Amino acid sequence: MKIRAIALNTFKEAVRNKIFYLLIFFGVFFSFSSKLISMLTIGDTLKILKDVGFASINLFSVLIAIFTGINLVYKEIEKKTVYFILSKPVERRDFILGKFLGLALTMFVALTIMISVFSIFILLLSGTFDPFILLYFIFLFTELLIIISISILFSSFSTPILSSIFTIVLYLIGHVIWTFNEFKYKLINPIEKFFAYFIYYLFPNLEKFNIKGALVMNDPISIKIILSSLAYGIFYISAILLISIHIFKRREF
Amino acid sequence: MNALEIKALSKSFRSNFLYKKTSILKNVDINVNKGSIYGFLGLNGAGKTTTIKCILGLTRPDHGTIRLFGKETGKASDRASIGFLPESPYYYDYLNAKETLALSGKLSSLSNEKIKERTAKIISLVGLDGKEDLLLKKFSKGMLQRVGLAQALINDPDLIILDEPFSGLDPIGRKELRDIILSLKAEGKTIFFSSHILQDMELIVDDIGILMNGKITKEGKLKDLVKKTIKHPVDYSLEDLFLKEIKK
Ligand SMILES: Nc1ncnc2c1ncn2[C@@H]1O[C@H](COP(=O)(O)OP(=O)(O)OP(=O)(O)O)[C@@H](O)[C@H]1O
Ligand SMILES: [Mg+2]
Image (cartoon, rainbow over all chains, first blue to last red; front, top):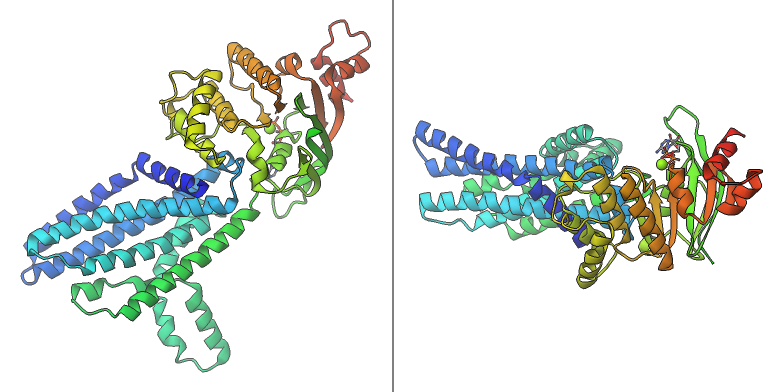
C-alpha cells in the first residue's frame, strides 16, 4: 500500500532525525520539577505531581506535534523530495494521508513513552494505577491529531515559520474558543449570532479534550461527553484533511 | 506508435501577483518514437524541465495534450510505466540506497519479492555495488545521480525520462551511463532525455528536438538534420547544428 509506505517513511524520518531525543528533555523536566515541588510543598504531593506530570506531557507532546507536523511536510516541498514521490504513480491525496498517518504514528509512540514513564512514576509512588490515564491518553492523542492536521494544512501552502505561528495561534485560540459557545446563546441579533456560531465552528474547540482537571480532582466523566468529544475530533480532522488534499491537488511544483 | 506525443503544449508562469504572465512554452509539439533514444536540447531556461514536469503531472499545462503510448495522460496511474530522473538529486538523505529503491518500488506497487529481485539487478547496473547500505547523506553528487537512475528504473518502465542525466558524472560515469541508456534501448525501452553535454548526446541519440523560445524549432533524425543544416558534413556534429540553430 502506497499510503502505508509514505507513512512508514515519515515515521522513519522522525526516528532517524532523532525527534524522540526531545523526550529525554521531558524526562529531565518532569523529574526535576516534581522533585522541586515535593520539596517545597506540604500537603497532597500526589495531586501536585499528577498536575505537573499532565502539564509536562501536554507541553512536550504539543511541541513535538507542531514541530514535526510542520517540518516533515514543508521539508518535502522545500527539499524537493516531493518530486520523487509525485513522479511515481501516487495520488496527491495519498501523499497527504500518508504524511498524516506517519505523523500520527510518531505522536502515538512519543505519547506512549511519556505516559508510560508517568504512570510508572505514579504507580511507584502511590501503589495504584489510575485507569483514567488511558482516557487521558485517548483525548490528548485526538487533540494532537487535530494539531497535526492543522500543521499539514498550513504547511501545504505556507512557509514553516508562518505555519508554526498560525498553528500555535490556532492552538491557543482552540483552548479559549469554548467561551464563544457560552456567549453565542446570549446574543439576540441574528447576524451577531451567526458570526458567533461561525467562529465557534471554524476553530477547533480543543478544550473538549482537556480532562486533566477532572482527572486530578477525580471527577467522573460521562460516556456521552467522551463519545461526543471523539466524534467532534474525528469530524474536525477529516474536514481539515479534505481541505489540505484539495489545496495540495491544485499545487504546482 | 509513439511512446510520447505532445501536442500544442503551452505553459506560462506568473512570477509575482503584480507581474503579467510570461509564456515559457508556446505550442510545443514533440514526438518520441517507441524504442528510440530522444535528445531534448535547449538553452538554460528554455523550458525543458517545465516540459518534463508537465508530462509527469507535477505542473498543469495551460493548453495542450500529452499522450503516452497512445493514451492521453492525466491520472496518477499513467505514471506506472514511466521512470523519471529529476534534474537535481533530491532524495531522502536519512535512507540508504537500498531503502530508497524499496520505497520507490512500493510507490510503484511492486511486490516485496519483485523489489528484491530488481534492486539486486539495478544496484550493479548503476555501479553502486557495496554502497547499498550507506546513507544517502554520505553520497557524492555523482553517486546520488546513480541512485536517481536506479530509483527511476526499479519499476522496469517502458518510457524513461532523464532530466540532465550526465550532470555530475565523471568521464567514466558518463561512458557507463551511455552504455546503460543503449542497453535499455536494446531491451526495447524508450528514452527521452535532456542534456547540455552535446558530445554525449550525439553518441547515442536517434532523434533530437531543439526547444527555442518556447517552440520546437527542429525535430527529427539526428543524421538527417545535421546533413540538411551543415553543407559539408565531413564530420557531422550536433554542436555545429545546435549553435547554428540558436544563432538564428
Ligand atoms: N515555478 C515557476 N515559476 C515561475 N517561473 C518558472 C517556474 N518554473 C520555471 N520557471 C521559468 O521557466 C523558464 C524555464 O525553466 P526550466 O527549468 O524549464 O528551463 P530548462 O530548460 O530546464 O533550463 P536548464 O537547462 O537550466 O535546466 C525559466 O525562465 C524559469 O525561470
Ligand atoms: Mg532544466
